[in-house]
Image 1 (cartoon, rainbow, N blue to C red):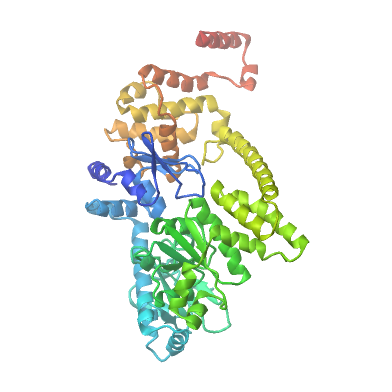
Image 2 (image 1 turned 90 degrees about the vertical axis):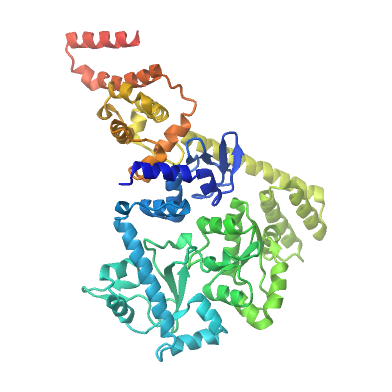
Amino acid sequence: MLPESFLQELKERSDIEQMVSSYVHLKRSGRRLVGLCPFHSEKSPSFTVFPDSQSFYCFGCGAGGDVITFLMKAENLEYLEAVKLLAQRAGMTLPEDAADDRMAKLKTRILEINRESARFFYHQLTTPEGREGLDYLVGRGLSVKTIRRFGLGYAPNSWDTLGNYLRGKGYRQEELIAAAVVGRGRSSGTYDLFRHRVMFPIIDLRGNVIAFGGRALTDQGPKYLNSSDTPVFKKSRNLFAMNIAKNTKEKSLILAEGYMDVIAIHQGGFDNCVATLGTALTAEQARIMSQYAQEVIVAYDSDAAGQKAAARAINIFGELGTKVRVLKVQDAKDPDEYIKKFGPERFKRLLEGASNAIEHSINRIREKYDLTTADGRVSFLKEFAQYIPQVQNPIERDVYISKIADELSVSKEALTAQVQNNIKRQANSRRRSERRDLRVYSEVQPGHKPNPERSQNIHYALAEDKLIALLCKHPDYYPFIQARIRPEQFVTSQNREIFSLLMERLGEGKSIELIHLSGELSGDQLSWLTWLITSNEGLLTQKEQAQEYIDTILSHGTVKTPEQAAQLSPEQWQEYMNALKAKKN
């Protein structure tokens, strides 16, 4: 348990606005700040920071909490890890008695295992057995300097060489399995997961080796094998070479498809290139790139799969408001091959001439049809008229309508009319969708799972909500509330657990500010409490209101179900009815 005084000082030194601003572009809206949520994809800002309460809440996905919670979600950290990182940024030292955390210790061990494994793989290139791996890398045009810079290596063609090496360093079998460098065999033994492969260490923004990618040197097994997710690694949240690209002086980042493309581009003199890790681009990866660049150049392979992936990337970056251009690699299958054939200088000109996202999308549509025929032109224009309403800027939209009308010798007025019809049709479709969403919103709070217990007792649950919000705003009401209601008298278990913790802490003279609760409430509970506080900002906070909420909650015990009422004697029935009348009066 962290000392209250430590958490209070940490709060005073860790402004949530400053912290969140390093991840999210915030705009002031009255006393709040709003931006696009870093935890889910959205086009309209619903992520809100409340400087007064040092809290955040997303009205889209329901994520909420304090500065510690934000850092936990943003960096995929455990509670104590987030506190430690926050303390380091604030120039504070974590109390020694708080450092005993199993998950934090396991993560530390896994990072050590990964570092030792990376050294092992790199060293193997200098051995006779590793010569095949070194020959492969040199054969792909990589210099010794590049191999060293990226820490490339070789995994021996053996079932247990790495495992035995790491056990000799004092690491336990369960730790090696958790690090995903060995797998559990059918018996009690283990086997090396990476065998006879060229190895690519994956390094995070803080310089830790968090995972590996391996390229097979034979046709056996998958061509590329990537580490599975571990306590220190999530494929969807990391990018290859981002640890280098984050320091680039360029204003753009290049997004390539694979390890070798990235390394070749870096060797060519472009230090701003990254790649995803064996998966399609995710919104989380796009958000990370958007934090470090004003523009992204998508440099995927020229084949159909690469172009399909590029179209998906355009949509993801578009939702984030990040400017995108798309590289068209001609006379080569990928950037690696292009640089080998034509050199870095020509690749630089290729980057400079990369088309913007709109031009790329129009060209992709154009490639589907034979524009020398009337039927092909009509089909192209129909699909173009479906696509161009997605361009939000009316000036840009008008420019491209004029350009296409000119190219195909059609009336701009006719094409504009078709586009306007599609804009109206798509707007109507969005409004219908929004009405459906509104109905759902009225039944379930945004971002929170349906709660049957709550919906069946909504009258009492709302009173509980307001009482909790009032208590958070006025902890000095504790004696008044404590004398009138107990946690076990709450109707809904969700609110009961939160109220119980608040009352327990207040009874012990402890703070109930969010930063003091993030270590004791689950992520869902903290999000819910943040929702209760933010959604009841204008709440009347007199003791009279507290008494009303308490009376409503306690009335739950006096209301009988139809089945219970049917079993009452005439005398009991009359007494029950008199009690209800008295309560109404």
